[in-house]
Image (cartoon, rainbow, N blue to C red; front, side, top):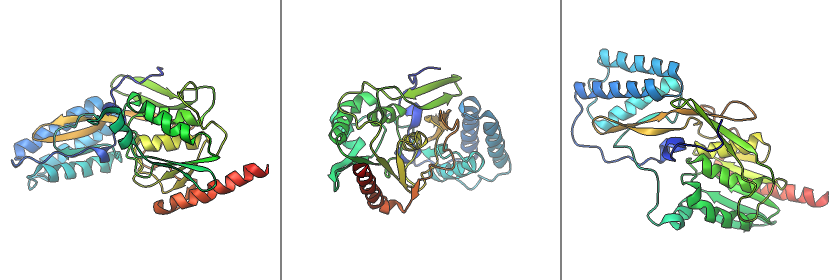
Length: 325
């Protein structure tokens, strides 16, 4: 096993919900076009999809539908993409696996560099009543080096608070490297194994650990942490939540997350289409499984829009309990 990931950012965990769709070309799809798209998808799934047996079932299903003429009335890229996605997900139950119109996008790199990345990655950061720090993380979708300084600044400011609330309700995913970076501020002086990712094409497992030597001040391993979730919390944001929950490092407050644990990358298809093919799966070192298809279930289930108020009340109680000890 290796401790450092060897795949680029987009090939790890770039949430399907955050990929911008290009404008659909004007040309209509013919029967020949549709068959070529299905053949292309089948080849990619056979070669790359993390579960080969599931790939075989999906390919047989799509080719059967082509043979029966079920796609004969579908003429636009967008409508064909939606239909293909529905059929693929009906068999795989894989929420990352998705066909969309438009070519594969590039990895997210804001024009403003690290400063722009910091604004895109982090939202509000403030000190709430009772000396409770609040940090909103909007995306993990940036290389760790690009947000290392902003992460140091934000997490160091929160380090002396009595409790910490981290909000990933609007976070659609990103890179496990950034997940590990942020998580490093919540643990102690020894590396903690957070998660592993197995990738089928390379037959390789990458392990992700906290960094005890992370720059700045750490919140540390002992004070209360609460993580806010919603149904929009997806992919790497779910990993962050699941890692902390299984390590009993945070109390999860909010709604069950989206349920996407299979990383992968976008692949180009013919005729103005692209497909996100999951090539790997997450393996938690505690549970030996992941949150695929079921999401991360909160410790304290409440409506997502009520999660902050609920977590703040819990934080105040936890702080009061620590003071009285």
